[in-house]
Image 1 (tube, one colour):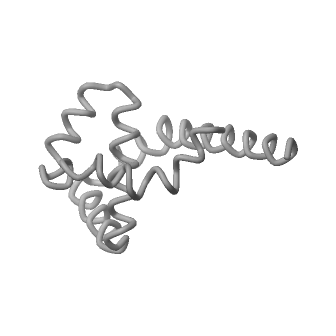
Image 2 (cartoon, rainbow, N blue to C red):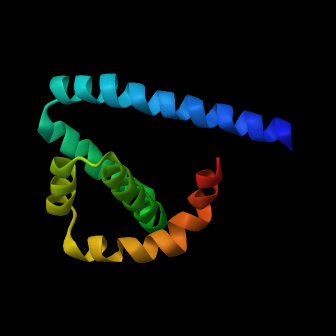
Length: 108
């Protein structure tokens, strides 16, 4: 059990490191190089391919990430970019879909 907890913590650290690098290096590079219209087109294709369940999980995950950052400009952009009905459903989807699958990671 101790070995599993240690390995889980190592995976969590590695994932945090990857996300930090992605946010500080990859995302700005793509934003600078790829035209905004192509980024939007790609985002739309990805969201369409997710399906209903996965797109709801993704939206809740995005909401969690934006609110965790504490950046008011990002929060405002989220509010402007996401239609009101899905935004209204986020707490329900979080409780019913997201937390049962992702909540276990909060204990790590």
